[in-house]
Image (cartoon, rainbow, N blue to C red; front, side, top):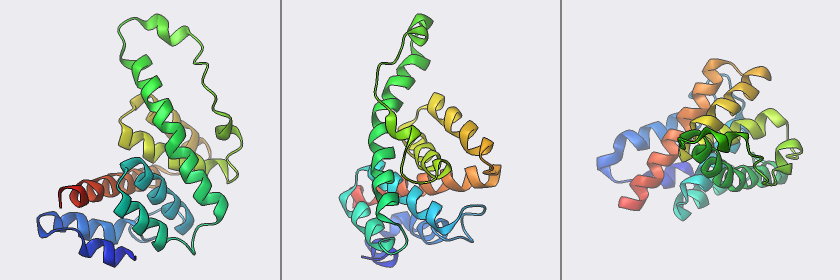
Length: 175
């Protein structure tokens, strides 16, 4: 399934989502990101949005763009952030700030060795953290990607991709 086929599955009430889906997944529509970064962010975001149709479409669209390592990193980012975003959102939101001083005791080894450039893994994790609504994690990933040279426009592009992928999942779910 291509992006065009995916867009055809999105009903007319969500035509803006169809239009945005066609735009943000291009180098022109996601300034300051490479084609591979766009594809990896889209795939990690699709995994986070949990819509099988969307996942299948994004996987197919970028099958020749992404390496096996990039596909695995997108899965790792979505899975790891599913854990981290819950934990760190709790730490951030709970009134008792003593929780922030306690060790997390959660394994996160893939962050140190994601099998792809660390900045790309951080971009995937940033997008997933935005979808999952963890401000503490969003801040941490923005810090890492900007330290690695990603511009504010690149960060915005990653978040725009996550937002549109999440909206597409919602529109596909509603039908």
